[in-house]
Length: 393
Ligand SMILES: [Zn+2]
Ligand SMILES: [Zn+2]
Image (cartoon, rainbow, N blue to C red):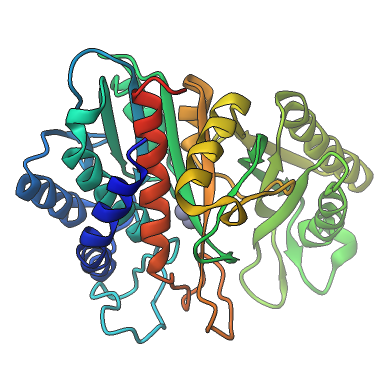
């Protein structure tokens, strides 16, 4: 439905969407501080006359609404809006103007795609029923703005029937949309362990229990919990302990991340980490404190929504550009809260330029997107939302 109209609108709005992405790229802000970013999104929505409510998710979240003709279903499209504390090294003419901060996860592209989709749907709103909610969500990196916005009721009144979203990925070529039914991204939980030994003079280790020696064994055992067959990843990422070369400290703190896909394997990893820590500490006769810090649930795509999304995407970008994958990602994304609340799908948006020799992954100071990915994603989102609200799905 309306495939040619969507393509024509996508052509006419493309350069504006690229300008928006570049503008947002200049002003990266980290979680819950996305005030300039949020203000800029509101100004774009104002220009287009698209109504919105702001102040969600700690202040910077926005919900824009595009009403079709008459009663119908409600589809939500989510875009995350935060950046990372990374110093940009791309030397692009529109590189970050905020020293030490960067849109290294491509959320600038996600916002531009969401606004681009909003322009297209706003032009075509006489052709569908129901409502489109565009959710601009703060704090994806770390503290989970999604959960807060859901608690604030963004999925209610009217109730959201389906939610979609996506992430730019430089491992996939621009122009492609990569999808997966079922498990897509892990539960990215954290853990903290404090090993309590007995400190003393570095010259007399026999009078001490050196927590650094204990930690060395603990790290080895925890690392070996990583198991591709589960799948499960356990990585120790920080070690803090000791102050000078001749004093054995009395404690060492380690932190790390544990990634799993099911509730059962999540509970199991929390238990296994403590078991390994206890075994080593018992051997050395020392104590420990242990904390498992659950972050997001795993991101599980709904089969039927994923299938319907792909059928719509194929209509507009062609079968060869809509690619299935069996690979799960050990990264996490708090889109998982939306997916756990309503039938949802989250796709990967290829953003690697064919000409680029080097591929820099997300969270790298040289990461960048081939901007033609904006059009591919906005067309696929628009086509799916229109098909969904026209009653096709
Ligand atoms: Zn990220
Ligand atoms: Zn991201």
